[in-house]
Length: 97
Image 1: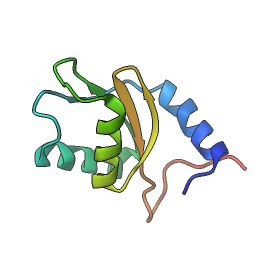
Image 2: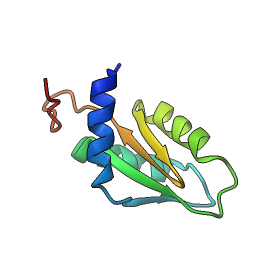
Image 3: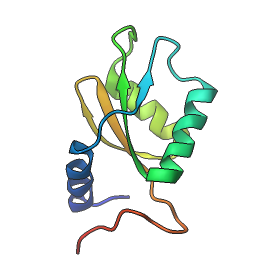
């Protein structure tokens, strides 16, 4: 579980990120989840853009993806959401004290 300070720090980091992954009308597929899984291992924090053709709300999609990937939703803003999952072996993101 992340503290409020850690979440605030991650939101600050996510402001600099561009959404590199898109969730389309096919919604959440196994191939999409495996792509995000690899991205979380490589980067720890990713931003996903939800296309307008998707009927579900962004928040519910973000929570569903996060639950299936064992990640944390850092932020939902407009049609994008940010996910974070710490890499246990060698964390890349260091939180300030």
